[in-house]
Image 1 (cartoon, rainbow, N blue to C red):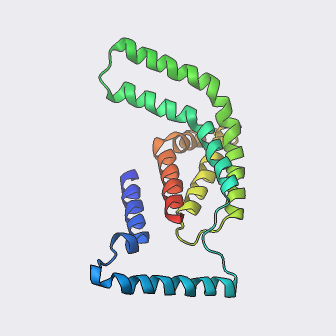
Image 2 (cartoon, one colour):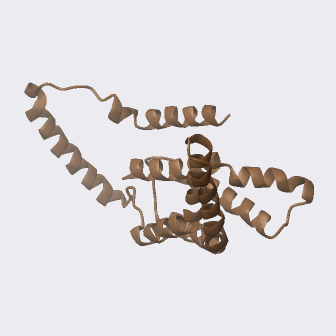
Image 3 (spheres, rainbow, N blue to C red):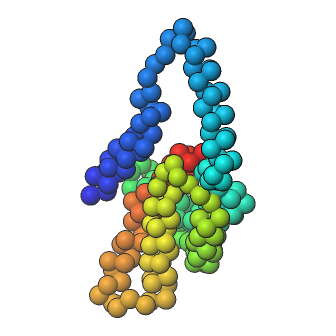
Length: 197
C-alpha cells in the first residue's frame, strides 16, 4: 500500500513538473528570438501583476524557518529511533553492538521524547500560521503535507492523552508510529516547497 502511494506521489510530481522535465529543445538559431520573447513575457507579466494586484507564490520565510526548526527539533528522537532500529535489524552487527544501539535508543527516547510531545504541537501551530501568511499556486503538495502533519500530530495527542478507546489505540499507535507516515509527510513538505521555489 505504501509503495503504491509513493509511486502515485512520484507520478504526480512528474505531472506537476512536466513542463520543466519535458520542455522542448531549442537550437542556437532560436536564442535571440527566445530572449526577445522572455523579455516581452516578463514585461507583460509585470504589467499584469501590477494592474490586477495578484500575488505570485510568496512564502513567509520567518514562519517557515521557525516551523522547520521546530519540526527538526521535535522529531530528532524519531529519526534516531528509526536509524537505530534499522541498523539493528538490517546490518550484520555483533550482538554487543546491537545491544549498545538498543540501549542508546532507550536512553535518547527517555530524554528527548518530552520535547517531541511539546514541540510537535507548537510546530503545527507555526505551520498553520505559515500557511495563512503564504500563498502557493504552483503545487498542492505543501497543503497535503500540512494535512498529513495535522493528522500525525492529532494522532500523537490522542495517544499521549489516551483519548481513544482501548480497542482503537493500537490502530492509532500503528498509524502514528509507522516510518511511512513520517517519511511521506516530510517528502510532501520538502518536495512541495522545492516546487514552490
